[in-house]
Amino acid sequence: MQLNRRLTLFDATLLVIGNVVGAGIFTTSGFLAGELPHPLLFIAIWVIGGLLTICGALTYAEMASMYPRSGGDYQFLKAAYGPVAGFLLGWVSFWVITPGSIAALSIAMVGYVKEFFPLSNPFSEKVLAVAIISFLSFINYLGVRLSGTVQDIFTLGNLLIVLTLIVSGLVFGSGSWQHFTFAASASVPFFKLFGPAMIAVIFTYSGWFVSAYVGGEVKKPERNLPLSLLLGALIVTIVYTLINITYLYALPLSRINGIINVAQQAAGALFNSAFSQILSISIILAIIASINATILAGARIYYAMAEDNIFWSLFKRLHPTYNTPHLSIASQMILACLLLFLGTFGQLLSYVVFVMLLSSIATGLAHFILRIKKQEVPRPYRTWGYPVVPLLFICFYILIAAQIASAKPLTSIVGLIITMSGLPFFYIWIKIKKLQREKEQDYGGS
Image (cartoon, rainbow, N blue to C red):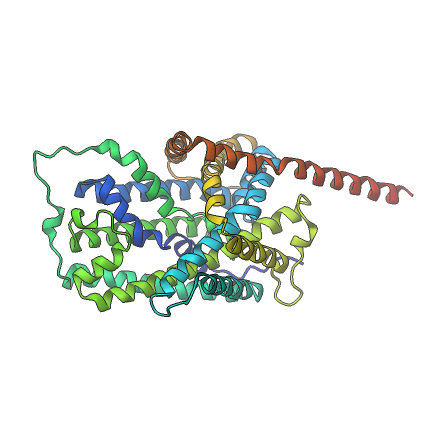
């Protein structure tokens, strides 16, 4: 029994867009306005961040066409460095990255839902967050086609509201193009583009590689996986750049500086407070799409690991009716709810940010290793601009990782320790696998 290929190029592209366009784009710009007090830099950093994301998508696209299976980075790291590298990524994803992200997103969503339906206490907020996680996990349990449809609906709904804000705001809104002007004598501190501001932008763009994780369920994957990565990254770059132009058209940088709900403030300045409430709906739709995409992609990592016999075998079981890795989905739902009630997901995610960057760097380097080691593997898509494009992606991610390690050395070390804690378990599974093979040979010989 295998996973069904039910997702189209349209589904896979919206999966990328929905996973990327979360709450970050509605909140990050207030921080950037403080770091980059210059209109040119404020817009340029989104363009640069988008170009780096496109470089990453081009880099991943070749590997996705080589290994059109579920698991994403797990498959690429395994092919380049051996199974232990893929396992460690899967290990930290299982215990921290995926359930922690689901918990964090659900709490963020509850924060916006409270604007419409006030909740009495923090416990009721957690109960609602658990309900959100459970409902979306159940949708994923019922089939990848249903999950893909839900993803399409919420992503398109979010995009429709965002594009309405952009077009109507720039054409009919009460903004000013004077907000883009600056004194001719003013210096432009370009070096600030590659400091903390760029870290924030890269994380706002993060998640663009998600379609590679469901490669086993995408139709014509050799064509559609690379295209979904490229189209998703390109569309997100255009949307992010345009929405920040809209923010700056609505408000001068001095008023954007430090604002958390910058999208709602900009909408209120362009139109009225009633329209700003619509942005809350857009954010809720965006977060639902992100949670759904995380649930969908995360479960496929554990499924791929179990398929390779280096994880609990129950995770490779597919539901007899819905053909989904239902036990993988259920396990990450339980872990996400547990982290949510323990209240530890924020701290755990901060520990593995450095590891997440290292895994992206390792995957970028895997592109070069596979060009040498796996020349015989068909490549339906070959990265445009090789080797410059992958090198740009790797170098910028190294720069960002170095800044995070320098700013938070202890946190980064703890993240590495959490990741490396999986090594003993990897060798236990390898030992079990070896004993099983020997037992089968003994039976065969007799």
